[in-house]
Structures are given as C-alpha cells and as structure tokens.
Image 1 (cartoon, rainbow, N blue to C red):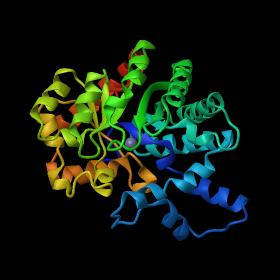
Image 2 (tube, helix red, strand yellow):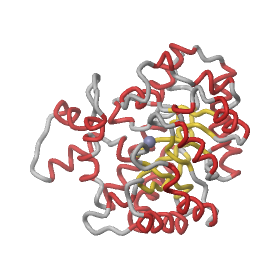
Image 3 (cartoon, rainbow, N blue to C red):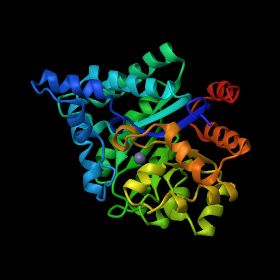
Image 4 (tube, helix red, strand yellow):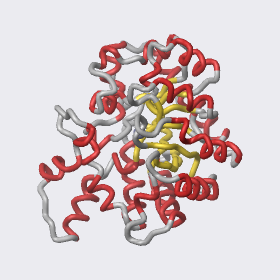
Length: 326
Ligand SMILES: [Zn+2]
C-alpha cells in the first residue's frame, strides 16, 4: 500500500526536529559556512546505529541556532506543514518550546506569532489544517513554565491549540508538575504530556490523573493492564512514534511495539514522526514499518484516523471537515 496517499493526522511532531534542510543550509551560508548535503545530514540526522540519547539530542543544536528569528521560525513552520501536506497529512499539530528561541531577543509573543504565520502560509497553499502545541520543559523552573503556559493561553485560538511538557522524564517525574497542570486545567487549555517514553509507567498514570487528554509515547504502560484500562476508559489518546522510540531505546525492536495491544485495549492511538528530520523519516514511512509487522486492516487505518481526529485539539468545525476526508 502507498501510505503517502492515505489521509493521515499527525499529532506529535517537533518543529525543531523536522528541520528543512534548505533553510539550514542557507542559514549556514549566511554565516560564511558552505556545507555539502552530506555534512548537513551528518549534523541533523542521527546515524542509523544511534546508541545514545546524547547523540540523538546533539541533532537539535543546529536547529536551535537557526530558529532565533521571526523569518526562520515562520519559514520552518511553513516547510514542516508543507512536507506533511505533500504526503497526505490533513491535520498537523506541531510542538516546540518557545523558551529555546529567545537567544537573540525575541519574546514569547513574537515567537508564537511567527510560527502561526508559517502554518497559515502552508494552509493557504496546501489546505493543511494545523495548530501549535506550546511546550514547557521539565528542567525549567515552575515560574518559567507558568510564563510559557500564560503565553500559550493568550494565543489559544490564534495558532495555538494546546500545551505540553517535554524533557527528561526520569529525572523530573510527573509529581513535580502538579501545580503547573492544575493551572493549565484552570485556564481551560487542552494539554498533552510526554509520558512513558522512558521506562516509567507511573508517569503515564500521573499524567492521566492530572487530566491530560493525550500522552506522548506512552510506551512504558505496556503490560500495566490497570493503566491501559484507565487510558481507554478516559479516552486518552496515545501519540505513538515508532522510529523515535527505537532510536532512544524506549524499546529494542518494533516487533515488541505495543500498538496492537493498545488498539485491542480500546485506546485511541495515533501514529507520528516525533522528529522527522532527526530520524530521517516521513510519516508514511512510520505507517509502513508498523504495517510490515502488524498488517493493518482498512478498519484499523480508518479507526486510527478517526481516533486521531477525535483526540486532536482542533475546533469542532475543523474536526467535522477532517472526518469527511477519510
Ligand atoms: Zn516528543
């Protein structure tokens, strides 16, 4: 099956992990550095045999340097949504931590506006619907994260559709973020939470208890029937990112990937790239590698699409239009 032709929804896609190669090449050239495509790939894409999280994270250094101006933020958002649109994605939620883009003087409002404009550009040209998820970071102070949350709330409906937290789950478990998510709940901003990407199932339980509507990765709850049941009962969406999970060693083989067990448990599942440039993949590729193992039926694919729309943070009007496309 040609998965580029299948209508798809992408809910977990980092803006800085899906860098446009031309944008980065032009940035380096403007700094007097001419690099071949091969060198660029070496700096932005993890090696196939990536064995360390440090190697994986190193691939975000250069994107962070590039994404310090309004122009580059806008263009990157446009390019990412375009790449998704060209492979059949009808709706994209892209996420990023705006605090990483303040190094050259931009403020949170300018950063969020620039990304929203880029998504708008892509929508006009390719018809792809989209929204921004604003990421807090686990290692940052509550004060900084609350400022990010406040900015996200102010931009809700003007490009922003929701809130998230990313970063080191093992060092900063869910219990540390009770105040932050109680505030998010009080502000009535939808949120998803990176949880269960590492081996800590309790983070998934904690995220659900904090009222999250979705969980990023959720791999660690595999085998915990009580947490899986809680996830299904509360209709919490799980954003699955297979290649990324292999590269960060959330699991050692996709043969063990829990997608079929999650589907069977009644959990709403979406398939995502996480970081398409860093991993050197497309969303269609992620569908293909899982299909090779789990042999999706038409009914599975239809369900994944409809459940993804259902747990998306789009407006009801947008959701209705998206459902008509599959
Ligand atoms: Zn992620």
